[in-house]
Length: 378
Ligand SMILES: Cc1cc2nc3c(=O)[nH]c(=O)nc-3n(C[C@H](O)[C@H](O)[C@H](O)COP(=O)(O)OP(=O)(O)OC[C@H]3O[C@@H](n4cnc5c(N)ncnc54)[C@H](O)[C@@H]3O)c2cc1C
Image 1 (cartoon, rainbow, N blue to C red):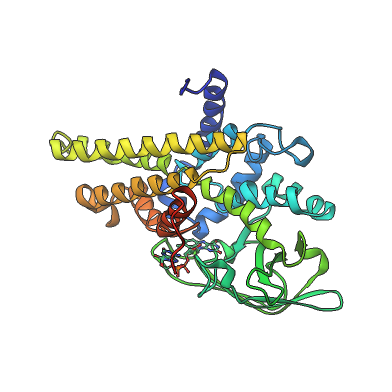
Image 2 (cartoon, rainbow, N blue to C red):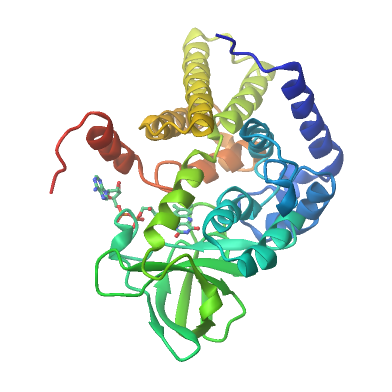
């Protein structure tokens, strides 16, 4: 079995990293990448993404008819690794590119494809994801936001929480209840400028402005906002979440951050301690395990295999991140007090590594039930 990248893939990675290096501002780490979803980062993503699209690097894996290059999932993955190791200069754009766009390709009407796919492919639109509610996170089917039929479409009432990027997003991919059954949920494409939408940012550990509550008060949307069949949104969600859950190459960012921390320790003459070296070595091993598992999952996606490996991969990557956070606190604690901004960024952003896109415990549950065949608890 061959584990190395092909020459063509190596060349592709060099193309991506050289684009990033020549395009990002020199003060990227200090003035823009200070946390994910901050104003500065989102502002910059609106310059960076159209440039990336122009270079043919925003949606290379999409079909040509939607503005892509008929590339393969490996290219998409190399791109994601390089972007995450720079603290995601695409801002929230990866959502539109990685799963909202593909969900529309599969379930959208021709008019929805025409309206949205070209805009996502040009890098000129920011999406947010309106799924979670205060009592409906892991148990998403408990959501209460409802969409009631009107003469011309639907009227939406309710609220969402934890909505990343909502403050600066142009659209929201929204889940709302459209029937009495627990799973009677539908997906809607809603412009954030619609009358009746109010966004309230709230402070959190992952930098100011990233997280928001979004309120819907009699928000009217036309019939054409519905994605797929009414009350059959679950299929669309499953498709979308499948893409989201493998989408984040956290291990790549972790490796880069570890290298930076180790360089700092070496400079200060503190990396000869065998305890420090062993701790760093263990993190490298976990990152590599997460990397190989991720590649396996990408391969399974190409071959259409349905396994619990994506859940195992999420756990492994999250553990690598948690270990690195402990390492940073132990050996470079100044990173949270005016030290290296790249280390601080990693620490703050990865606080959510075991929560966002499905919690650590949920992954364990899924592995127990689907992988080991254990009975479902109560
Ligand atoms: C940084 C960040 C960004 C986010 N961005 C978005 C976004 O853009 N859009 C969006 O819709 N949501 C977003 N979320 C929300 C995220 O998807 C939820 O936080 C997550 O699904 C968990 O839901 P919850 O917070 O309601 O916790 P709960 O589901 O209430 O869980 C609380 C605790 O109970 C445990 N638990 C719950 N159910 C089980 C179970 N069956 N078995 C074992 N343990 C269980 C959980 O593991 C957790 O430890 C974001 C969250 C974070 C932290």
